[in-house]
Length: 236
Image 1 (cartoon, rainbow, N blue to C red):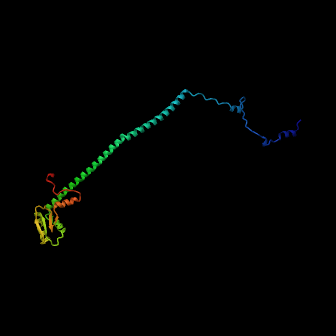
Image 2 (cartoon, rainbow, N blue to C red; image 1 turned 30 degrees about the vertical axis):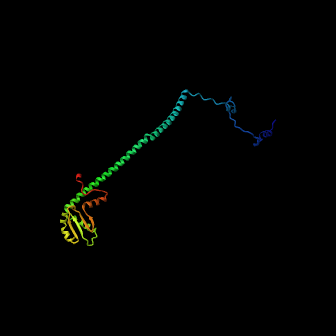
């Protein structure tokens, strides 16, 4: 018969950790199922076969995508080749034609500007002729400043001088000659070859040309224009 003391000794023994080897968790399954280690070794069931319609649709989508990408790439390459060919051929020819046309237009514009400028200068010259002729008709003493300027250009030092003026101008200058040009060394000569408004002054072999035609050409030369004071009769 087992005594109480012996029973307590039976359950009072403690198992040290060093004596415990491997410990695993035990999962309780259904009755009749194989152990967990055997169940893990069984192959997984295969999925059900894919319907033919799904396979066809997937193959169509994949083929369409691949064909679309390939076609777009080929179209881009062909477009680039045609563009390069156009730029190298017809495009270059068109560019050269446009450049030549632009150059011709620029030259034409420059020529038009020159013609317009020339026309403006010709018009200004014609207006100046009318103004001078009007002044000659209104002011009979218009030649007086011209004579003064011509005499100032000569270093006379008492030397005699001959002044040729138009007969009409000489008549109009008589009061001024008596007051301003009363020197005995000055000789006045009415010369019909000298146009009104001008004069010729000669002294010691030097001639100062103060004629209207010479002064006109000198004034226009500063503008780069060569136009005679009297235009030919055929231009009227």
